Image 1 (cartoon, rainbow, N blue to C red):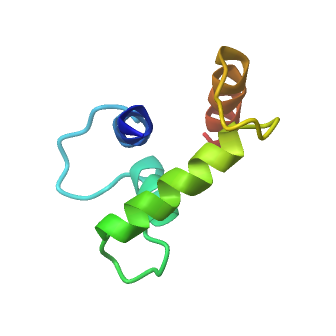
Image 2 (image 1 turned 30 degrees about the horizontal axis):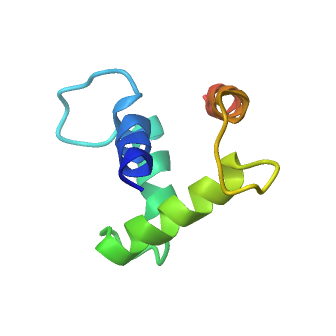
Image 3 (image 1 turned 135 degrees about the vertical axis):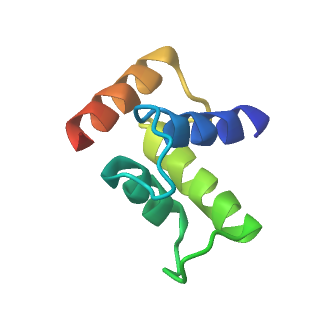
Length: 82
């Protein structure tokens, strides 16, 4: 489960480095993905729910394991969102 949290952090930091005090469009998209109840803040429960959802999305064959091929597919999904 720790590596999934690392993956989520990667998603947040994957966007280009910006020193603005506001989120750019890509960062806002990731924030909104995790802010499940749209209250403008992210709770620990929302992070866990998002991680579970993300795991299910990535685990294409539903074997409760994520392969390198499934990670590559995730990379394609992320690129298509840009």
